[in-house]
Every structure is written in C-alpha cells, then in structure tokens.
Length: 121
Image (cartoon, rainbow, N blue to C red; front, side):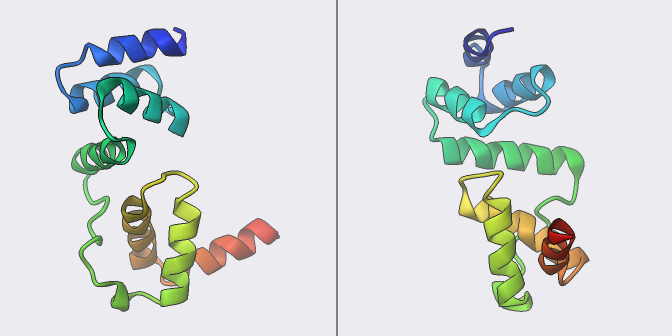
C-alpha cells in the first residue's frame, strides 16, 4: 500500500487512537515522516499525536513511562541529558524523549554511558 493510500485510510478513523491502531497494524515500524504526515492529515499537531501514540503504547504495554513523574533530580543530570539527546533520535517531542530516558535510567543508572561505550566498541 502506498503511503498516500495509507494516510487516506487513517484519516477515515473516528479518532486519533483508531488511526494509531490502524497505522501500527499496517506499518509496524512507521517513520517519523509517516507519523507526522498522518498527524497533518488528521489536523493534529505532530507532537500531540506522538504523545497520543506513546500514551496508547504505554497503556497496552504496561509500565512504559512509569517513571515520568519521578523528579529529574533523582537521576544523574549528565545521564538524563544524554538520554534525552539519544531518544530525540526517535521523537521530536522532548517530554516523550525524557520519559523514555527516565525509564531506561530507572533500570540502569548509567544506561546511556554504557550505550555510548557499546556503540564506540
């Protein structure tokens, strides 16, 4: 299915969550450009659409974003900054990037230092 056909199909959805479900069932790994195109066609701010996607995925997968309300001061500032930078490769939304980074850092306090060392090896 061509991208434009997919976008048209998604725009027939009753609400953003229906569009998200359709998007991920037809395109399991959509690009940022595809997500933004769908948001534009739906008349939704792309960042708001990404937040809706993240919220839906969190409710389905359980536990994702569970550390978003933990104060930033509970995390190493250098690790959190590195995490936000890394996660912004996947989203333009800084808050979503921070949620993801906090989840990783809650599991492993030096996650991004280790990731950097691994990528350099």
